[in-house]
Amino acid sequence: MSLIGGVVESQIALLTWYQLLFVGTSITVAMGLLGRETRRTVVDNYELLLICLVAIAAAGGYLTYTGHVAPGTETTTRQVSSWQSSGSFSHNATVRNGTSAFPEGEVLEDQPVYLRKVAPVLDGVFAYTYSASNESDLTASADIFVQYRSVESTQNGELVYWEVKRPLTQDTERSLATDERMAVPFSLNVSRAAETVRRIDSEHGQTSGRLEIAVISELALSGTRNGRSVDTARTYRLQIIPSQSSYRVANAGPVTNGGDQTVETQVEKSYGPLWMLGGPALLFGGLGCAAALVYGRMTDYLTLTDAECRWLVYRSAREEYDEWITVGRADPVDDDIWTTSVDSLVGLVDIAIDTDERIIESDSDSTLIVYTGDRLFRYEPPPEPGAAVTAGDSGAESSD
Image (cartoon, rainbow, N blue to C red):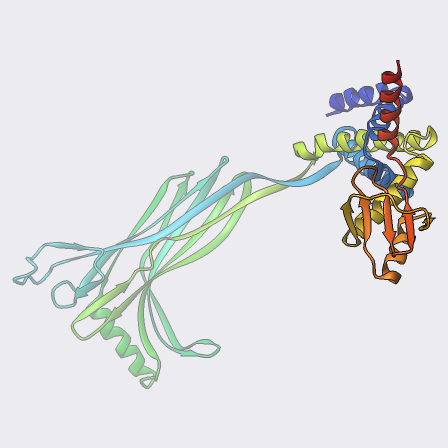
């Protein structure tokens, strides 16, 4: 970016005062070719226009400086590492007591409901795996228990009356690299477990809570993940809901966890093309137009002549009072008619209003008159400056 800044600075240095003066002169000449109304508007609002142009140039200078010379820096967050883990249960039950629908020895896999008399033993596997973006080496230890408890739901959460855990699989430990899978099997006779949970509740006086059976996997992790030390434990739960003749397995599916590591860095700000191109355009355009405005004021390019001012005053009044004026033929009047010349069209309009007469505009020479019967009031419009010069030139040519 420093190279771009140096190039832009050299380009700005090339824009000398003479170049600005040339631009200003060109714009001023163009403004001189504009209509008289436009030039009068510019002259009447000279200070306001100059302030606006300077403000535009200042805004363009700021955009140009920040976009090309000193863009500054901003803080961005960059991800340097990430990881994700997944723990899940799978289960099945083998038909121990065959029926017409379920032959003995058939393996029923991941069923939502199992029949207690047909397949009383639930077999399953707890699986854990993880992935990491950088080098990792974890040691995973998983112990699986069957959990019996009596629990009641309250407004503040769960109220546990009692809880008993008994091991199903223990002391399962292994080293895990990224994307490796750890699988720990378990087996639970659900019919016996249902009897056990009722017996334990009877020991506690048959509480009013809900009796629950669940397979719990307690996983401990230690080692390094993405180069950072890890020492944590997680618990995964597979709930079993027995009824009189069946039991349902409430498997919520894989439980995932993840995280990432980020760092904050300072980077150079970047701007869009509108900022990069619009800044110099506003800067040079504002300076050029301001120079043109000042130059035009100093050299009278924008100044209206007295003849142009009189013409503009007349045209303004002519448009304002157009409804009082009718174009027609003005015939000669008798010598005994008193004729009065009026200095302005506004004065002639006042006479027409006072006498309740219309203003007649001659279709031959644009003279405006008000005839009251014994008096004739006349107003001769000023000649249009450009048209007057043209008429004079054509007359000179014809005399030659």
